[in-house]
Amino acid sequence: MKNKKIVLGLILIILAMAIGGYSLANKQNKTDIKEEAIKVKIGYLPVIHNLPLFLAASQNYFKDAGLDVELVKFESPNQIIDALINGSIDICGPSGALGITGIADFKNPGKMKIYAVSGEMTDNSSENIIVPKDSSLKSIADLKGKKLGILAGTIQWRTIARELLSQNGLDMDKDLTIVELALPLQVQALSSEQIDALLALEPISTTAVEKSGAKILVKSPVKQYIADPAWLGAGVINVEFSQNHPQTAQKALAVLDRAIDEVNQNPEASRQYLKNYTSLTDDLIAKVPPVDFKTCNSLNQQDKDAIKKFFGIFTKYKVIDGEINPDNLLYCK
Image (tube, rainbow, N blue to C red):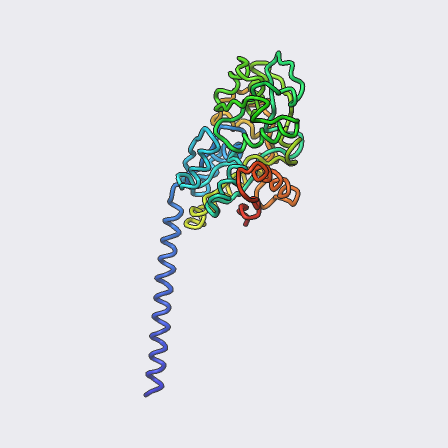
């Protein structure tokens, strides 16, 4: 009789565990369904560094993956990083500023991870120093006593400018005037000679050259003077979002990885997707140089060394009181 009670007790325990397991699995399935129904907010700047995002959205890759995605436009890199930190957006396309991301993570660690980078590996140029068509300037050193325009409100480009000038014998605080300009104002400021030169991201360089006859004073200055390859842009994901919605996050990043591969394999055919997300006309779209992209998983040691070297300028000029470790920021599978 005692053995029968023991057997019956074991049976009841097994049944309870089975029911509990079914209930947990059922709850998990409901959680998964709920997770896939959330809206994913992806921030972007209207620049060519976001071409993979534009391609994915235009080709309905997010929708095909079962994702409800909202693209949120910003006008400055700082705004994007602030939005990622406070959770207003979940991901940004590959146009997030790499330097600002590193600085923000150093000061407030663990909020963001980098899933991709954008910039220059070979002869592609994503930034140039340009001058008006009638300028007599021949080198960076000739900027002494002049006005240099840079992107407004970003410590990344201010620090880049400081290092470029320093390597050419100029003190940014004493030898020239820095003029911070929002992207929409840069071409006009250069063509009207309100500034003598402009440290310009693409497509600003190409637009100025084609529309106002501007000249390139220095091609790819970051790659020449700071780090080669020059990875200046970053695709970034909010860590809390990735932890709370891991399946959705992985699906979204898989779509972006696919789009990055397509752009890298055929940049010329991919150009068309700039049309609906930037102010570029068809003739300018055909002329802007392509940007190089790499996912986190495809970065090699040379890439990581270049990123670390780039981060080093923010330590050098005391933007931060330590060193940024790229490995702590990378979001790799």
